[in-house]
Image 1 (tube, helix red, strand yellow):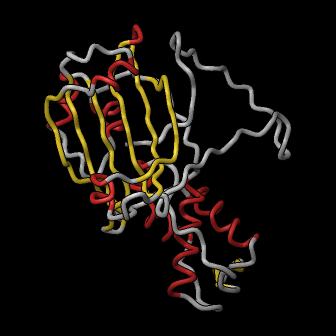
Image 2 (tube, helix red, strand yellow):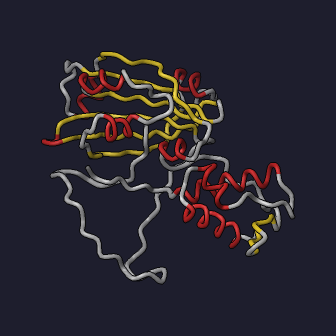
Length: 269
């Protein structure tokens, strides 16, 4: 099964959380937990923690002294970014306070306009799962997904509160899917999305749609997610050209891509 590219490294998530903590609860001279304690808290490797701390040290926020520990040198000069970015799987892996509530799970017919856009017969029986995701107990995103009935029925038997559908497709159902299309656009909240996401009607939302196929180009899953723009932003980490950054170009064999597939950053639902 193909390995998916994560467009937002975990150490940046850890750095953001530590910045929030320093700004909100700490003062210059206070000591941060040890690298070992931070690894245990965030369930990440020591390399990830060291990268996060190195970024804070470079910004002059912390000072590290061998044999003594890591101390706050100064508070951030301005409020750090409060919005989340990256993959939902990372939110769980870093023990962030996020969960999803199932709003609907059952057989459904796809709207004719959407089915035509995707090249699907509108009469094709499908399975629909919609979820409202929360972060820190506040509405964060509305995920709407359409899939083949045999897939949806299996997913409906899984607790999707603290996992993503993509993760369950790969790790539990073992389905070798790939992302064929992705679109991102700004939309205005309508009555339903405004009520679910607790924003005013007409508020800006980030709309992301993704189409997943499997062997033979067979339709598998279609996602449409609406994110609150005040709580989430889209990020893509671009690869460095060979030889940039002081490292020699890696010699990696390119994975074989299914016919018709187009590679793009993937967000989890």
